[in-house]
Image (tube, rainbow, N blue to C red):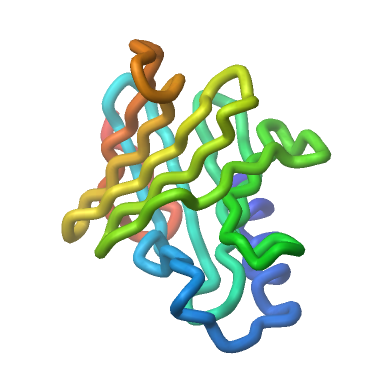
Length: 153
């Protein structure tokens, strides 16, 4: 399944790539293969650095999610989430970014309302939460890994 998803992502990334608009805040630093092994194996892959779109896939516990970060029709940077390939995607608008941190929000979504990525070297934290004042949260501590690496054990 990993090879199929990765092949699809690489094929899609070759279509329509254009120069990146640095003012949009596209988080190119997310690119790569990331693996979290705490509480079960979760892998997340992001490709497309240097273009106007980042494509991602998340594989966890037998489930999957297609992801994309790109500009919408209004020119806003948006994180599109498709759990299980569900369409249409749920949209989360980039509301804050600095260095290697990006926050996407959709206050009208049930859960999550926020998606936050933060990178420090070869570690990237991904967190989803219910918004300000909510105690609903989930977090993954990803480590940069070789393509298609697996958790030990």
